[in-house]
Image (cartoon, rainbow over all chains, first blue to last red; front, side, top):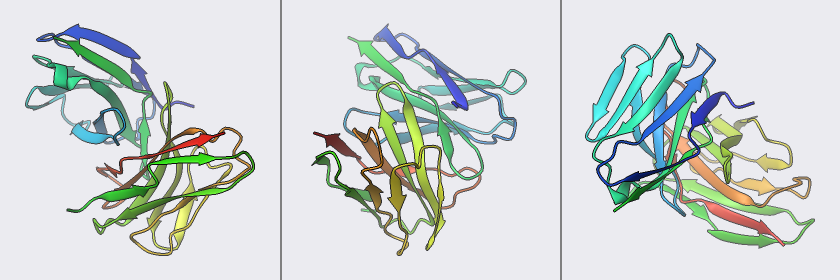
Length: 110
Length: 114
């Protein structure tokens, strides 16, 4: 049973565009929501994370928007670059381990 | 440099054989995890360990076994009971298993059953 639902499964944008990846959850006990970035053949790496007591967090070109009442959060990549092409996973902390979404494969074309 | 080392990177197994994937960390992290990654399925938790000599089943533990005899090491055995073992296996560690547990992942081991 997927505790974190992620969409879309894949995404293609042109360089400079703003891809948006969405995630939804049901368990209100989740209290930490990270995003991980994974390049082919590598392990995922933490990109940015948010707590439910804030509605937005920015780190460089990456922004998380969090809507606690809707139980949704999203990742925005400003001024996307071909080097951002990767798989992105949202996750939520269940108290002992992270529950991951199914991932979004992002391709940024030149 | 601190990090997580997984070996082997690629492994081929015949049906009916057990195989063990190695995971070593030098980050002095207490918690360690094994995830399985399949295309379009995300990362699914197999086992996790919060302290030495203790571990718990994750969502898909059937057909797998682990041990945690040392803080630095958390090997995963894929047994013949695992019906569909071909996958990319990721080991991770974190300082603790609660709260904002930032996971550090290894580079993964790809297992293929022939």
